[in-house]
Length: 54
Image: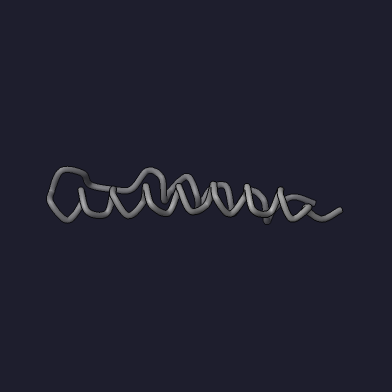
């Protein structure tokens, strides 16, 4: 079963917030205040998990 338009929009809003958070973390990395983007690692893991579902 697929997503409704509202569910898809909500999903995309969540992704957009995560991408914006990654962008901020990358800037912190560039300035030497951080060494990695935990949000990016979380996005990668979540995507891998969803692709591995039967």
